[in-house]
Each structure stands twice: as C-alpha cells, then as structure tokens.
Length: 190
Image (cartoon, rainbow, N blue to C red; front, side, top):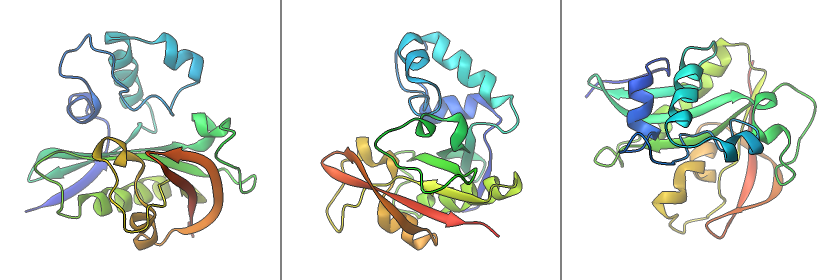
C-alpha cells in the first residue's frame, strides 16, 4: 500500500471526498468554515460544487488529498485562518496576531479507516502549510478523552490525533461538537 498526500488541485477527487452523490444536492462541500456565513447560507446545489472547483484552481488550493495506490481516500481542509470563518468565529479564540493557518476537516473514505490515514492527512496538511510559509497551524478538535466520537462529527478531529502530530493545546474554546468541547491545538512551524 502506497500512501501519498498531495495538494487538492484535482476537482473530481475533491468532489469524490466532500461532494454529494447527486450534483444538485445541498451538502457542505467543506465550505461551512471556508467562506463567510452569509455566502455559505446563500449558496446551494451545483453552485457549491462550482465554487469548490474554482478554489481547486487557486493558489493555494483548498486543502490536501490522500491517495492509496493512486485512488483518492482522504481529505483535509487547510487554509490561512484569515480567509476562513475562524477569523470571525466568537467561539474559537485568537491566541495572538500571528497569521496562522487552520485545519478544520479531516475525512477518510469508508473502507479505508483504521489505517492511520487521518495521521497522514494531518502530517500532509502541516507540510502543505509549511510549503506556503505558514508560521503556525491551528486545529479545533474535540477533547473526547477515550470516548467514541460519532463518525458524522469526527471530521473536526480528536485532541489525541493532534497531540500525536506534535500540536499542543493553546486555548479552550466555547465551541462544542457532538457533546464534546473543542480545544484550540497549535503547532508552531520553524
């Protein structure tokens, strides 16, 4: 098994990871935190996919994808915090004025879970942000201890995932996902 993490520039592969089964369906497309709330609420159906297609052509693209033997199997959304909803989020504090990047969604396709792909995606997201000169990266995972997180809400990651990637807790938040508090985890980049 060969795992490779690459910039999310291939729209079809991003669509396979975060798009709907029906092109006209209203799904997140991993835009909920990426674009302003009013724009997110107004954008529907195929227009959501069209925006993601545009984002895939931008530099930097909207995240990274994991491939297993050439097949797309995972996704991580990462971008400068200033260009995301986290820049204005009242529940997720700002630690300082550093131009940090945020990683907010990590997804692994069913059938490929339990192989450590979330770890590879987070490591790949860190490398991606570093390649763009990010001074630090933040994530906002749930602090679930050893309790199970519902798979539909596990996209934010767990504190232990971020701990293992070298992130440290920088702050508490007032955000809660699936009954679990979220913490602000941060990794300073050299």
